[in-house]
Image 1 (spheres, rainbow, N blue to C red):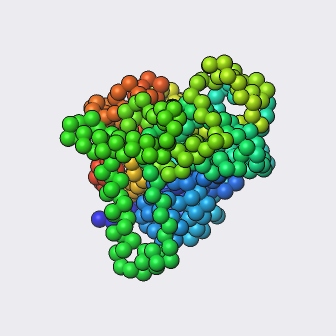
Image 2: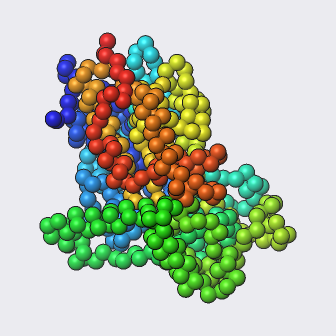
Image 3: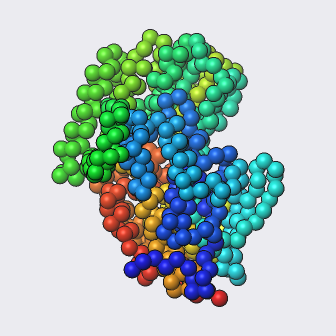
Length: 502
């Protein structure tokens, strides 16, 4: 059966979409194309769309998922320059798609949604928002809310670095006006951003003091170029692009096995670990440096990064790799636990994001005045992007339990959006003002997640951004992307409590 696209009286629900990154764009496009719905509004904090790919413009910024899988399935891009697309190409792709669907006219830029609260009497969400350019505050009533704010948006900046008096910035807030040529530069952090930044600026700076917090498992980045022949075949040879997409997709899906401790998965785990070891051994010939760069935890516990330039960059003569903790920051100097002191001209923080803080206190207030942040606490209750029972008609895109490290997160976004589209169609077909997930499906899902996690690498003593402060995993590692899609292919009304329109 097809989707129901209006209520019986011909009206459609009013929808608010928070965020204009990949999640928000996907929600807006699917509302248009699958439901013919135009009664929606997108709110974006920044002056342009892009989300993560608008904010992260640091040198070397690129996707670590193959480009052919890092695009909407309904909008293939045949013109990627390389296997792993750089940030400018990804951002250009997003703007091209947005223009095709006339999304710019539906987005309020430089607009911050400050408060979202459910009004039980009106059976609607009340959104307070502010124009950051003028300070003007406004209110919107919405039947349905999509939250596409994403987890990689709030920089994690340790307080100790506030004392640094020279130029400093986070990788997600890159200072393009500062000339790094021949400067003494400090970089703190050794995650994906740092691993891309270091090779991109190492030959420009005078000296680089690199403060590694935790070594990272790294595998080669085979970043071949797509020349004119490749692009021609993608565009004009029947099924060529589709087959290439499927091959990339399933090769990525297979790697989920390296995160399992089951005996049947020992071979792929061992092979992946050996590949990372041999790659590090071949690229880092200095034994002392190689020891510093060798992880002491199980492979897969923390994010695995692809790079072919990182190890050679750290091996250069103008780079000093430090593994001691920074105990003091004063003026332009950093003091380490071993007493050594480094004076630098600029400080770059590659210290990650506040992934667990994607819902601020008192931001989303549901039925009965329940603060979603308090409701979730450190153990969010969510059912495939549908939030807690106290928050009807609220869809979280890339919320807890949807993080990935082995395949494309865009697949997760599309899957959740399509599920939400089914839910909205169901509401219109049955003349419903609200649907809210029952507690039992949430509990069953979390219990299933906990059970499946017992034999995964994250159940060991290691710590990573996939876990909260209590050590509980809040990323969807219980299965594969395909399994997630399989569970969400159909909307099941019996998982929800429905309220008829007045």
